[in-house]
Length: 230
Image (cartoon, rainbow, N blue to C red; front, side, top):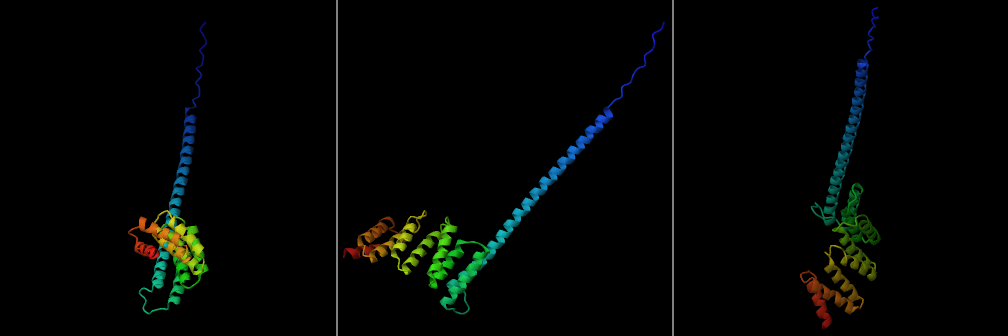
């Protein structure tokens, strides 16, 4: 008896659906990466624009402040003036413009000259406050901080406080650059001499002559030493 012929069962393939799913997932992944890339690029572009805008603004403010400082500087020293102006008026006007410059951009230059203008106008407390602001806000400015301590010493002398002046000269003497050591020595010597402390004054003069023989104050120090000997 012949064997019954079994029908061959054909399994349905899932290749088409698998491929479709894979392509769908791949497309989704590509889209996600594209969105991430666009977001990242946008963030970078915005950062560059923000930074560029900041520097552009900073440069604009810097230029504006420098123009004001230069204008005030000319008035302070009476340069290029068509008509002579009384000193008091010059210092008042210069101080006003230096303040405008400082409002535009914080700078040790403006603060120092604001202090100088007030000093020339006899406003010693206001001058002192400006110098203290300079030293506090710009402690590393090697040009104006030493000058600030010198001016503070001069204000102290104007106010009759020799001890405060000596303290300021001590700071100037010990300042990191050492640029004004000779100036601090000669001025300290003069104060000590005026106080009747001849030996202490002499030590200052001798140090100046020994350590700073090329100083413009060396000859004055020698003369003061000789005068003491006489």
